[in-house]
Image (cartoon, rainbow, N blue to C red; front, top):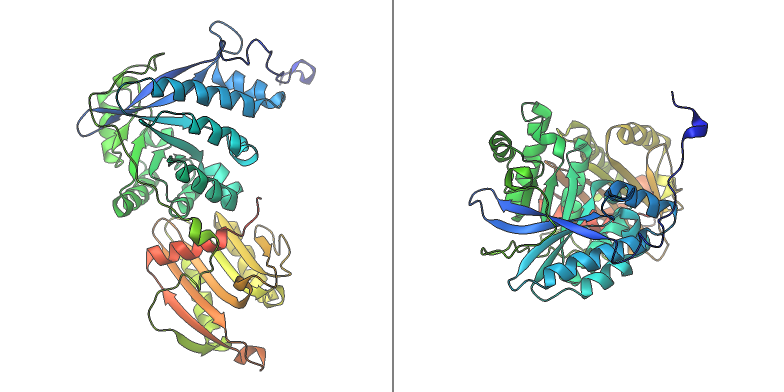
Length: 414
């Protein structure tokens, strides 16, 4: 075990490192796996050659230690986007941004993106970790990026299977498979992850990127995983120059969700006929939807609106404690709901004026599962168990996704 006194924490970046002259980017091509055509690049930050900060890891560690991360990322983005803008032909450029910068200083990212040339399609990579920590914030930021003409790539997908549950929520135009999947293609869990990503891509037209392709065998593995684009040393190491492409660059149509973040599930329900039933008959239906989450092949999200915290009963608390131990995100919303009604459940205190406070909704959304009970209180003056609700149950993935986005728009950061 190392002597703790000898562990030196990262120090802030020196001024001569944090400058446009000292920093550079290298570029790794993205290749269409069917045609072999180069369709874009990913920009990778580097520090001064031969210095202790040449590695991007050392650069980021120093920037974090010195509170300089936003400044570092702004310089990196401006450098790479200026290089892409100087090309004579249109190009697609993937850029990486740290989650903390996206959350705390989005204007830094948006300002740099606004300076790019008209021929540059920018794709901003968001990690599934950032989305899990602050789903509402990341969804809102994704909409600002899309409004600025950018596409969204969800990175590191499959590092843990639970990350798959967030794909339909963010609706990324690009899904980047975790590097470990390429090395474990014979593992059934890897195939299950790849199948879930393939299903999403087929239903939305999203591209799937496999990273780390170094050999012809790796290329075959990527095709087995369902990748459509690839990156890796098989096509050459990252270089300091962006190259003109003689092929049509990848283009991504945005998937806007902003209007859903301000709505309620009942507002977004299907246009078909509503049904009406008392609470005591809807309770078994609600618990059946919850049970769907526990039976899923890949753990989904569970989002539930209880109107008021008093409806989160001891029996409900027992069920949700167990659900939270098994699922990547479980949230309970209602008036006076505490931040953590039971361990692992993210509670949201709804304002009395929020129309969602009048709704009883249970949403299960994941890689393979989509079901929602959407109901609105009719305001009857009667015993609680006899209160009537207008309701619908839907298994339509698009409608369930919209309902989930409406709820997630109200969940604060973890």
